[in-house]
Length: 321
Length: 118
Image 1 (tube, chains in turn cyan, yellow):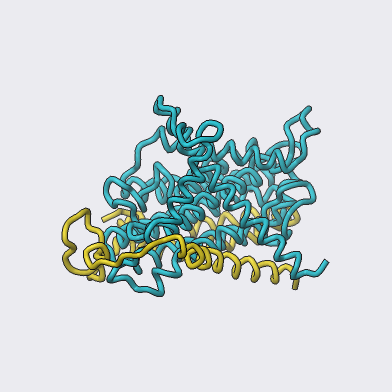
Image 2: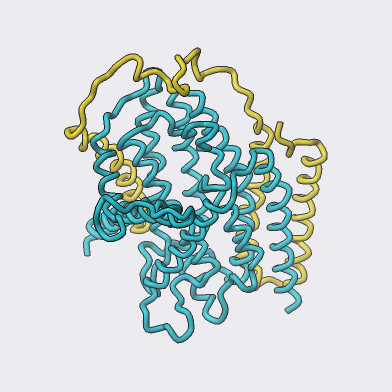
């Protein structure tokens, strides 16, 4: 097949998935938070269990007036949603969805993922600075502080997996988990990775960048309607892809549970990922938001030494084995 | 080459998609610009001043520490990839030295109160 056509098909598929994922997660987040607070969540809009709520939301967002804040830096303000969405789409390239189903099996998959996701901050910062709004600026600054503090534990917690596998290719990392999922030997790495990834995603309890009770909406205070929707789509997509990376590195990727191998691998992959997404939503309605100094302390004074110790202990165990 | 073609096409598509969506859905919107509506949102107050003020970036030094530690943690990747093929005692000793230097820098930063949010 023509390589241009193949690439185009891939990108259309990924964009369709990104939108479908946002459609499901808008509804799921509301429904789950509803049930966790002993409410019903969306119910009246139509569809099974109010599933059409997402459709109504999307229509509303498209039809909302698109106004530009007067003092905004127009270039930055216009381009920020695009910059935020690019890394969200790019990371799908390296995710190993099934046994032989990966869009592009890059040999540096893990480093590619880590480096591309940190570009999200540039979009956030463009939005925060370009809006010329004090809340936005503070939100963007906090997002920066958060990324600085949690990027290092995030990277260090994956080193143990790389040591056990001897490869940065995500497909090989899944292949190496044939006997035991890496969550067993790397439980510390998994916990550090999960906490750090919640912080990278700006999700509660680390959602200081958009803390609604202090900063209105943080860096996208001045965005409304369809432009805001683009940020939301990117965020839900990042929630999925980061959970998918956790599944790939620690929870066996597309590998089935014993006795259930007749279910195809990609189903397992998506299923495990959505279980982790559910845990993320669960945490959101369980824990209160941390303070900014607690956030920095947790990153620098706890997760960093723990992840370094995890690397050393893994190395020692592999050396004496 | 094909691998990089994919990356280029994904980047372009990811950037064009939001821009085209914003432009493409413009026909179902109305627009009534208004100076009050277009002012910066400050919880309903009339905004005073600009957001472009001299701003205390509390984590300026955090950012410098981040740069150092981030580069050092990237150095660990090549070591981790080949670890099982090296003579392990030696490789472990080497990384112990590397991490000791890293941790010395980290402790120094802690003692200098660089890691305290102000």
